[in-house]
Every structure is written in structure tokens, then in C-alpha cells.
Length: 119
Image (cartoon, rainbow, N blue to C red; front, top):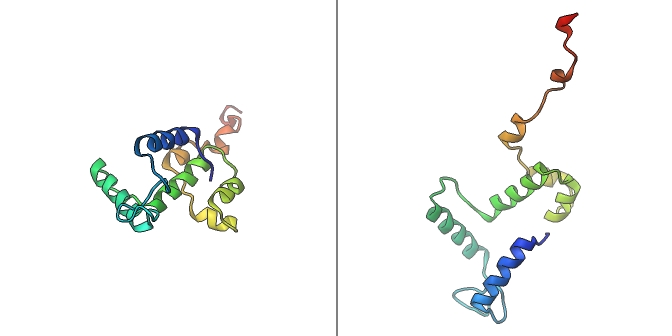
């Protein structure tokens, strides 16, 4: 996965504020252990509820959104495949969704034909 310079700055700010000793994101119950998947999912649910979002937010939906945004911005699907760590591009295709905006922006090849009504 690529590390965005914006995210890197956010992580640096987090580190400066909390000064974690061993792990960047330790378990709140046992600081010697990493944050587990269940805790991350619960945090996603908490953030979703706090923001008043109607949809369920999970790490998996964030992964789907990441892949979809990359593709919509022109990233080659093979690059997305590598970033997601998939062996098969078919697996990557299941993580991608085409937005309604992308569909609406499509120009039909028929609209590019010369106007034959004038003949």
C-alpha cells in the first residue's frame, strides 16, 4: 500500500501527541499488544454513528472505496491489484465499483458521429 504524504504528516502529529513507545496503535486494554481487528471495526462503527452516517462503515468498505477512487482517477487496475496484494486481477475487480458520476460522464460513441440528419 502506498503511504500518502498527507497521511504521513497526520501520523507524525499523532506520534508527537501520544508518543507511543512500542506500537503506533496499541490495544487500549493491553498496550503491549497491537490494536486488533475487532477494536478497529468498533471504532469505525463509533465514528460512523458520531458522524451521523446512514451507511455502515467498515475497514473493508474503506478498502473498496480506496480501490474505486484509484480506478476512477485513472490508475491502472494492475497497479491497484498490486497495492491491494491480490494474486488475481479478478479478485481486484470485485473490490471496485463504478460510481454513478462515472457512468453519467460517459459519452456515447454514437454522440460523436457526424450529424447525418443534414444529408
